[in-house]
Length: 366
Image (cartoon, rainbow, N blue to C red; front, side, top):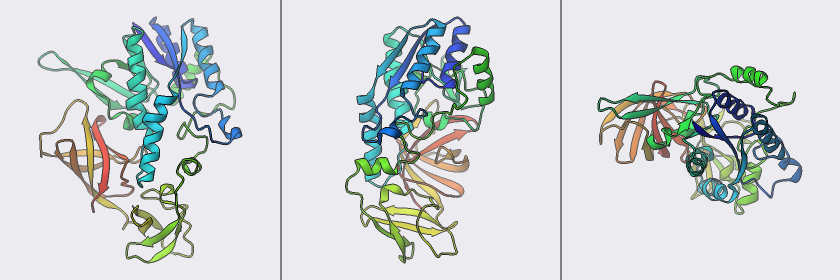
């Protein structure tokens, strides 16, 4: 089988390439050159744990040379800026909490890169995502593809993939999804994958060098203004540095001193430039509205209420609740209140370990 292998220069994709080569597939290695912040401090731009660095390209090329397979660097800077970075900035300007990794998977990794695989005559695109794909045969003989959580719960990336379609799943391979990270490192030793003693995996968002986005947002959003931090009964308790720097559920870094009871961000009002906070527990919400709902292999009937599991952030736990679905919108009500329901984030819907789909959180209700 001819397979396009998405290379990042990291351990996961390097082991992936070796595994597929060992299985005697015909491979083509491709690394995407994505947009990175040209206004970031020069010293920080050289951080090797971020994507697209010279070190990453060299490691990916070295693996492909070892295996004797072609290696290409695909320049996708402009497309990544337009489809991932700009919407990220626009959402922050509106007071939302976007998730650019979801947009990247939809438009870049399993959008343009999948198209490139087909152009090169590849039957499949293989990536190092920690998620699994299963296939069921329907009674009429047609195939139905299911997206499942990765076997390693700490590394599972299925939350970011809820917008995949049946067509795309039929063209994707996720060979690492059934493995644990320690197994990957053992295989890296077996394959002599180049890895320094100081090796650290890429982490945080890839297009700016800092650990959090605040400095990046300051560089690209010019009209950020400080404003009041108020309790839900409208008592001023502090001053915020700008709405984009705060997210729903946040407790640390609020700069509110002298209070015995910890407070969490409960909501943001872009009209009055106000951050509202509430006592622990009182900031939680039980229901939310979602739009742009996408289903992978199944969908409920119109206006049907269905019991599902849901996650409202990539690091959050799955919680029980009920979805009332209508068109591509819905209202999800949790059995118990949840912290951190932020507009712009995704609610991802599960049945056991299967990812059924998800949508964009429009608002918390109550």
